[in-house]
Image 1 (spheres, rainbow, N blue to C red):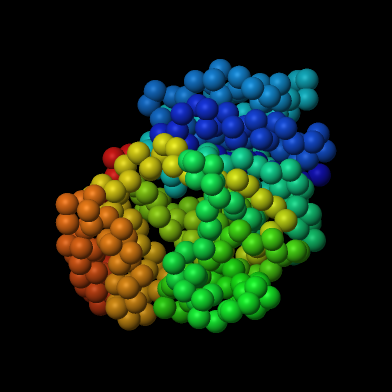
Image 2 (cartoon, rainbow, N blue to C red):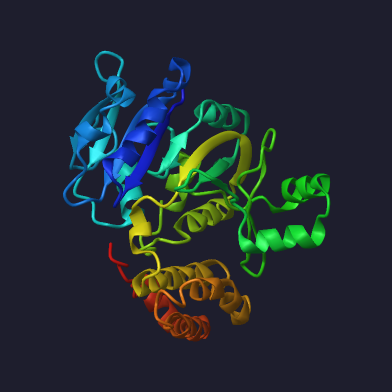
Length: 361
């Protein structure tokens, strides 16, 4: 039976956040838990997380922690004696999301990979739906599921981005039209001008095509992962767009990405991680560097003005927190993109060794 290796990179979160995720997996019904071959936790923290605190709840009865410092697929045990699931804690990983994910995949063993953010909880039926869709579709690349965002105050927030809300207001006046609009065209869509039209909180029955899916909760076959060479380690700092990058490369390799509303997670945003550094110049610069990398790799031939418009919200949202310097950083990024767009040799050097800030990580 094909099963999942669950890949969870973590940085800057308290143990309670990881415990919530592991407890949600432990509370799945036994038939669904059997779809989990292992959980690989790529711990980028110094000092490492306290495993006892992470496994203080129901997860302690389901998972057996195993600290791993070496790589090499196939050298780790599968099921532990007693029927428990191994929780491999990959320690000593540098603070890089892409390196952490690639390292975690390198020691995993299952044919399917399920990538989860460390601040989500998995809803019942999520793994079962991923497995059912994967069994039923050949040539499937990435499969994303429904994301319900929970704010720190407990309220539920929309997952539509600003452009998606604008499109819906312009083209859809009634709920039925809105449902057709999203399900028919714009679930995880990237336009030719590189604009994202996304809403991942849709109760879509079955599954539909998507250009990209939400990175906090998606699965991928190992064959597709190997075909595209994994995550691009050039995305550093916030690693913004690293998931969209690999998903577009999976599409280009001949696979198909899809979205289903029948597999869901709750995403508890605002607890540690990059939220610790939100609003700083380092975070803004990291986002713009990663946006530049993404644009050069996938949408270099589009007019540079579209890049300027697409990245402008990053600057506008940080004007006050950066004492008015955000627009200048944004303008420098736009000028750099224009130069690299037209200078092939400089572009090649920059993509090989991007000037990517650590953004405090």
